Image (cartoon, rainbow, N blue to C red; front, side, top):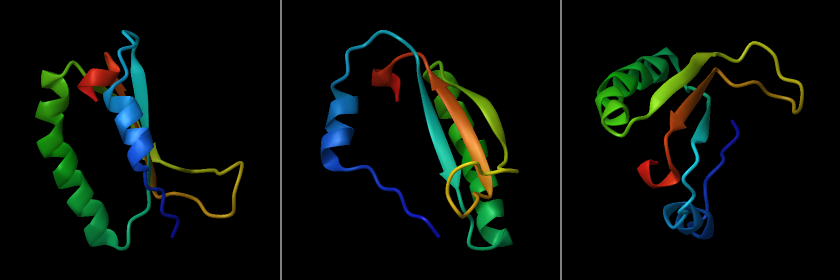
Length: 88
């Protein structure tokens, strides 16, 4: 499984971004088991209220059917649009 973790510098840069434009977060998801996918579904249901309160919305959530670059595919992809970086 691939692991992509943000570093502290990237997190601070995003937190201090004063850009007024929208940003889109890309989630690349790989689940360890069926139970992992079910747990993520529960997480999404609980986070949906938080997203709405921040003016964010899920643009796309679905399976990753094909991979053009790399050697492994992801189980799911989620794109979330935020109105500004500060709401992320």
